Image 1: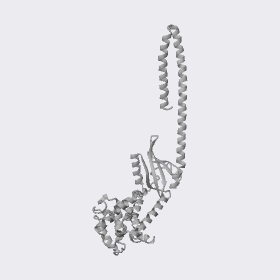
Image 2: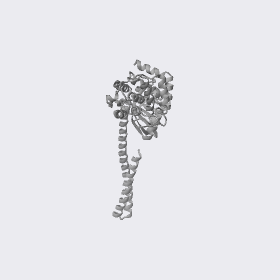
Image 3: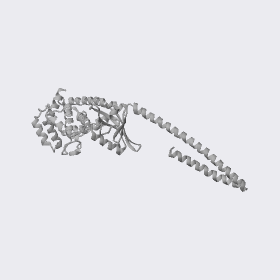
Image 4: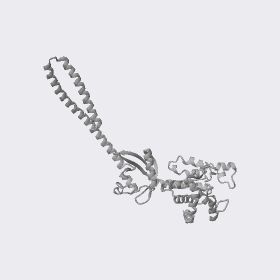
Length: 391
């Protein structure tokens, strides 16, 4: 019996009993003056009260029992509906007991998506089986969810049982059940879609290279080199995909620049240069409505900023410039200087390295330049260039 049902029965009984006692005594005293007769009437009234009370309590309990049974049936129906959605729904669902730090349950879709048998995941500890490709990212997201209660439509990289990485979109909600915090996570696998997105973006980038008379393989070279440099600088797995897509689309805003300015063989006039410098804002306006590129806007928007604050479009300086844009700025200048152009021959490796060192702390973030020099000394820059030529 619930507390509410018990209280309802007690209050009803108290009200009926009070009315019976007060009214029946008044009526008996008013109608019967003989003491002996009144005594028998009081006895009969007491028996009637007991019988009436028993009947009333019986009726109330039956009524409450009907309510309880209906509530139980409704709860059972709701549980069956939840179980059906949980087990057979198209999204992968994972339930995590945050207090115990263990995976409490997972539906078949989630297990299939990440290649786990049920016994290898459910009941295991969060630290024992790491599902996130970046454990630090997982910890940050859990702190964020605990702060706001829920998150919707976020992207993440989850690790498959075979060690590969899957791109997913996920939503999560924090609930309290039986005194413990549970995290209910719903996921959809975007890996195949992500690959399709990348091929589309690569097509855009190559088309822009042709229009801008860039050298063959420019888009692939700067993208792969940006990711390699980001990895050397400690960018987590979850941050590498936005870094890659931002690099692919770094000059997408040049779509809005007239051909006579974009491909002018000589120096630009002051007015033409002002038009050219608009391409970061044009790129941002083009990409902002595309939801899956939300985290990839930093490079297209700010890769022309300078460490000393003399860049554009916003004149940001130092660490005000996002790390992704600081990384790409070094890569872009390296690729531009070491590639032939219609108006000049490529610089030598030594000349370009000397330029990067000279501009460290002026144009470029010194830490990024140092990491690039290490990457170049390791031979990785040449390997990336060779792969781009072969592609």
